[in-house]
Amino acid sequence: MLHQFYRALNDGRGLPEYWRRSAASRRAMDCQISRHAYGSHRRQYLLLLEPPGTQPADPLPWAFYFHGGGWTFGTPESFSPAARPWLAAGYRVVLPSYRRPPRHWLSDIAADCRDALAFTADLARRSGRPLSTPQVGGISAGGHLAALLALHPDWWTQAGWSTGPEKALLCAAPLDLGLLRPAMLFRRYNTLSPLGNLTAAARTRWLLLHGTHDGLVAYRHSERFEAALTAAGAEARLFTLEKGGHLDAGRWTYDDRHPTAELIAGFVRPAGSVPPGPG
Image 1 (cartoon, rainbow, N blue to C red):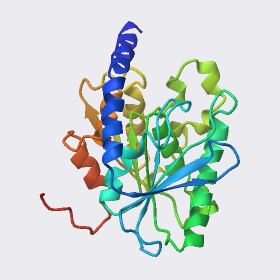
Image 2 (spheres, rainbow, N blue to C red):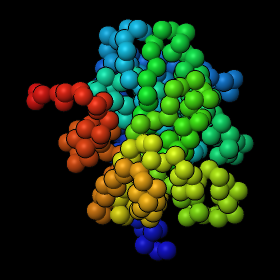
Image 3 (cartoon, helix red, strand yellow):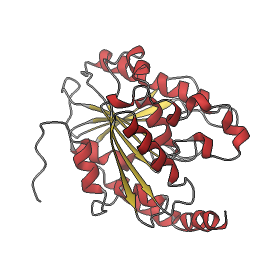
Image 4 (cartoon, rainbow, N blue to C red):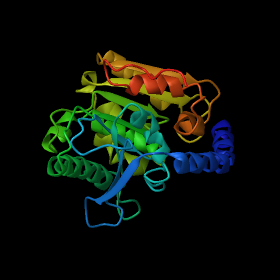
C-alpha cells in the first residue's frame, strides 16, 4: 500500500538521529560488560551486562534482550542502551547475537537463541551467579524472538533454567508471520510465528509497544497478538503510540523522558522492590 511505503520512508529518515542518540547513551552507560562466545560462528556470542560493582555471588535477577534489524542487521553492542531499565532495577542483562541470512534463517536463529539460554545457565553455574526466573524483551525482529522464547518455557527448562520468563516486553515486533511479505518466504516458518504458539501464554505477563504509523512492522501485529493473548487468559497490555513510527517504540532506550520510559521501568521492576526516589 502507498501509505505504508511513505511510513517506511519516514521511519528511514529518522535513523541517523536515532543511532546518534543511541550511541551517546551507550557511551554514558555505567555497567560491567563481558563478551562470551556460545558457539564457533563469529555471530554466536552474547554480551553480559551487570550493574557497577556487581560480584558473581550477588543474587540478582536476569533478563534477556534481543536486538532488532530484520533478523539480518544490528548487534548487541549497538542496542545495549535497551538494557538500562533492567540495570537500574538491579538485573543482569544478556544480549545475544546470532547467525544471519542468507546462509542462516529463522530456524537457525531460534536454535542459536536456545543455545544462548543454555550457555548462560552454564556460565551462571560455573561462575557462581545464582539463576532466577528471567524476563525477556526485544524490539522489531528481536521482539519476535523474545515472544517466541516466552511462549516456550520448555526451551528454558531444557536449557537449565527453572522456568520460562515471567514478563515479556515486545516493541514494534512482527508477531504474526502470516502478515509478512513475501508470503512464500515466511510460510515455511509457521511454527515460529508467535501468534500460533499461545499454549503457554498465560504463564507470562506481557507489555507491547507499537506505533499506529509504523512503516516497517504494521501495527496489526501487536493488535492481533494482544487480542490473542487476552483470549488465551494472559495478562497483556498494548501501549499504542498514536501516529508513532517504527523507531518510536524504541526511543525509551536512550530517552528517560520518553512517554514509555516510566512505563517500562515500572514493568520490569521486580515484585516487592521500591521505586527509586527523585534525583
